Structures are given as C-alpha cells and as structure tokens.
Amino acid sequence: MEFSAKRAWLIIASLAAAVGYVLIVLLRAEAKYKAYLAIIAIIVNMMIKFSSFSFQGCYEKMAISGEVQQFRWLLITIIVVNLFVSVLKYFPQYEPLFLRNLHQGYFDQSQPVGVKTIVGSLIFGVGMQLSSGCILGMFTGIGDGSPRSFIAIATCIVGSTVGTLDSVYSWYTGLQRSTKPMKIHFGIMLAILIGLILITFAAERIVMGYKKTYEAPVNLLLNENIEKPSHIKEIILKVVQVGTALIAGGGLGVFYLLYGSMVNLEEGIPVFGARILQVCGLHPESWLYFSGKVIPENLLSNTSIIVNIGLIIGSFIASTIMGTFGNVEKSDAVACIKGAIGGFLVGLSSRISNGCTVSIVIGGMASSSMHGILWLVGSIIGCFATLKLTQLVTMKKKTSDDVAAYAVIP
Image 1 (cartoon, rainbow, N blue to C red):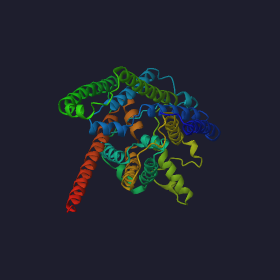
Image 2 (image 1 turned 90 degrees about the vertical axis):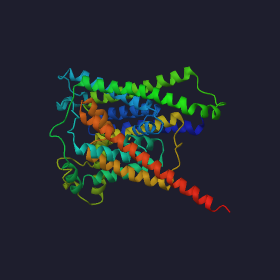
Image 3 (image 1 turned 30 degrees about the vertical axis):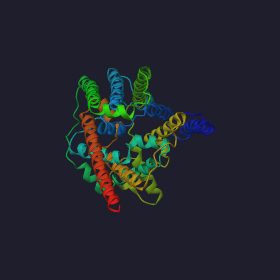
Image 4 (image 1 turned 135 degrees about the vertical axis):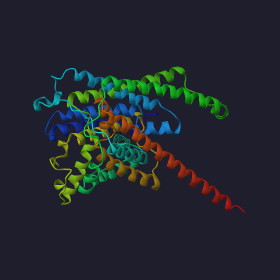
C-alpha cells in the first residue's frame, strides 16, 4: 500500500496519543503501575489488530464459509494464557507483582453454571453478531474509525447501565445456577483445547474436499486469470498469524502475572454509565448492584476503563501502520440500527454474565472453569442463529424486490 503523507501523520498522531495517554494515567491514576497496564493493553490490541482476529469475525467465518483458522488462533491464545496461569499455580507463595502491597493472591475467575450462564451467552452472541463485534471488537473498531462501533459502544453503555437497575439486577441474579463453580483439572482443560484445535484441522480438510469437489470447476472458470499467492507466502502468512496469536496470549499472560486476573473489559462500562447518571443528578450508588462498589469521580482510578482506552489506542496505532484507518464499510441506516440494538444486547448480557469474551472465555478457561466452555458454546450458537436468520430475511427481501422489479417490466 502506498505510503502517503496523510498516513505518516496518522501514525505520528496515534503514537502521540499513546504517549500522551500513558502520561495522563501516570499523573491521574491513584497507582502508578496502572500506566504499565495501559501499555500492555496497547501492545496486546496492536497484536490482535495485526492478526485481523475478532471473536465475532471467527464465528461468522465458521458459519458462512467453514473457515476455522481464526478460531484456531483463538484456541492457541487461550492455551498460552492457560500455561502462564498453570505455572503460577505451582508458586502459591508469589503474589501479583502490582498488588504485592495488598497481599492479594491471584483471582479465580470461575463462576457457577446454570440458566444464567446460558441466557447471558445466547443474548451476548445475538448482540455480538448484530453489532459486528464483542466489547473488545467494539473498542478495536473505534480505533479503526468505524462509525458503527461508536454507535454500538454508546448503546452498550446504556444496556450495561440498564443491567444495574434494581428490577433487572434482581431478575438475572435470581436465575437458576449451581451453588458453586464447576471446575475441571487443568490437564483436562488443556486436552479439550488441543482436541478442539485438532478438530479444526479435520474440519478444514473436510471443507477443502467439499470445495474441490463442488466449487473447483466453477472457480477455475471464474478465476483462471487471477494470480494465486505462492506457497512460500502462504507459509509466511501462517507463521505471522501464529506468532501474533502467541504474542497476544503472552501479553494476556503477563497481564495476569502483574495484575492477578484477566481484566474484565465490561466491568468499567456500568461504572462509566453510572458516573454519567450522577452528573445528571441521579443517584445510582443507592442501587443494589452498586452496593459495596465505588463510583469514582476520577474514572482513571478504574482499571477496566484504563485498559479499555488502551485497547482503542492500540487498534488506532495498528490501523494507521497498516494503512487501514478509516477504510471501513459505509454504515447505512439498517447497519446503524443493527449496531445500536446489538450494542445494547451486548451491554445487558455482559451484566447478566458478569463478564465478556475476554474475562469469561479466556479468564474462565484459564481458571479451569466449565462456565468458560459453556459460555463459549452459547455465544457461538447465538451468533450462528442470528447470522442465519439475518441471511434468511435478507434473501427474502431480495427475492421480493426482484419480483417487484420484474412486475413493472412491460
């Protein structure tokens, strides 16, 4: 891609934003170590952006074309984090480096399993597909200059804040679930993840065989003059993709080592919404959800908010380096409405689930919790169902438009 002056200035602006943000965190956050967390968040999301990975994107590709490579990179990332956590478990005398003064050990992010898990994951999957991204995807999209992501995160804040209302909070906390978390041995969790990776290779072979049998003759006629990438380029691309997955997993592992848990990206969203309500003269601090919690005037005292802003800046830097900043699909009215509805559902379901894809899937599996696996399956089902329903509605609309067009032909 051509390196223009505009692109150069965008790169400079993104790097300046990163430096400025880290300095602001150093000056405003009550603990200086949070600046390091901001730096880690920036680097991790740069790697995620370079690898073109997203939870929603890999689900969608599996549903549409049977492509499983991105899902495989996700599994590799989770395995790397699991290995980090498993090593730390053998040294219980050590505490998270940034929390040593608090004498606080590593957090167990396992949760009870039940109807609450299923409801939260299914709604999250629906919202993720409509908004074209989970919470991490929304922050990445904002850094990429996507208007749809701005709309989605705004309604996500609304949905998450609605989830803290007493009536809503009482409803989902009353849903059936086990009395305690269901955990499995680390070795079994690792075996499950490796087994899923092997399944992706088998699925890839099946899909390739199908395409060779049924699609190859047509593609040969349509693409006979199109130059295909060389075998060496394909190998290099796969090495880069695996490398970025390993680096992203390593970055999350380092985050766990320093802070003691996978950051809960959505945890800061209702805090942000509650702070807005306080500015408007309301008193959310009296609600059941916020009992025992602090709604800080200085939002940079909230670790989740610090990390979330870092993720946006990391995506901004990566997109300017790649030359993709602003190169997003134009969002028509329908796309904006879908993004708004999806963002609201993601925000609400993250409150029901008490987490998002990073904290539940990655953090949950790293804690050897069954709820991480079940939530992953539920979110995939919700995403698949929404995608298929959307395709069906679009196809019917296209058919009716074609019939109407033929009807006016004399």
